[in-house]
Image: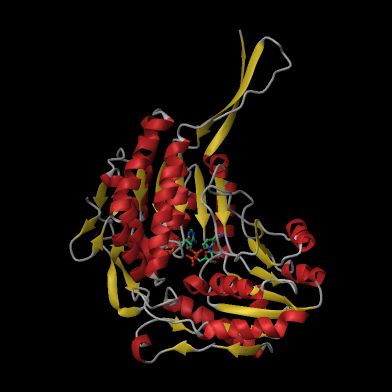
Length: 488
Ligand code: NDP
């Protein structure tokens, strides 16, 4: 392997080799559970480095696209086997870099492996349709071709699964890739790229450039030789990337924020609803785009639900993700912690009632980490900032409603539409929810977070650019359709 070098330093990966940046500068990755621990150092790349990667990816694509899908899939199978052998190491690295518990990062690595295997098989599935022509002597069909060089820009919150669910389909459909991972979790990404290197994927097919979003990320969005961009991250950056890609005619896909509601109907199984709310809101310290952030409860069961929710929230053990006793880790960075704390202050100043938590944890084992308590507000109104903006932290807003109709109206009263959940035993409530809720993921009697790799994933409204990722949907983005008409 050529990416990791001594002293916890990691290189870029360009044209099949580990390469230092022309800047000769590195960026530090800190452990959010202990800011005194540097997890390692990655390259602070320049546009010169990026241009080398683009040249390599462009050249490599000529051969890569001519391989059969099955042959391309073999490299994904190999990378999956290698990753399986390195599961513990990759999971531990991700926990050290972004703080979520080891159980979560192990699960995420296992999911990454399953995604690689799913798309490895995709190389042998159908890539077009025969469409009857009005000319009885002609054959008409569609075929799919790769887009070329794909730029992949990823966030830190799923540092294993998101890079893989973008890279694997891009590759199997014949594209080559340049990934710029989130700076906070660039080392975890380097380890994923090492699995492709160990699988002996041809030089230039996968390239990784680490560096700042505003320099390398922006240059990927603007570069005329990058044919498509797939992005997951904040709306601010996503919208900017979408504009840059649109102007130069590149294909783009944006997965952005969420403000996901859970509705608890009067007829719900309250224990199940509490369990789903806690898991959806506080797992991964609330740093999931599908995390529950608004909990809308029918008045008949509001008090009972609230008491059960409080009791369970009090049981949450906060601590270092590597400790097996920990249920909730720290925020992923100092920046993220400050954002969460500022939203908590905003909630208080706008008149919501702080029911539980709300404080930064700083004593003893928390001294050097970015910890915050799981937090619950009540008396939250829909116009308040904590009810409208994505917090990306362990904070929920409890809201009381009279009816399911009112609950649905409240649930839809945000700019986002990623995921939504209802707890109910009433089939007509379920059907209303499926029909009326503006969200790309509809979850019934299950938490708002939860994505299966074989099903389409993406949001409505301002949560996405309206395309979908994962499962078969990935084919729509990573290929272009040609309609072929043959007449003998
Ligand atoms: P950001 O948008 O800040 O960053 C995402 C990626 O974009 C990073 O690699 C970042 O690089 C890069 N970037 C930053 N600025 C630019 C720029 N000007 N041009 C191009 N690229 C740039 O998001 P976060 O990493 O903070 O992730 C959290 C956000 O992601 C949340 O808002 C969350 O909702 C969203 N998200 C959405 C998901 C979904 O599927 N809908 C899933 C997961 C997260 P760098 O790290 O160097 O700044």
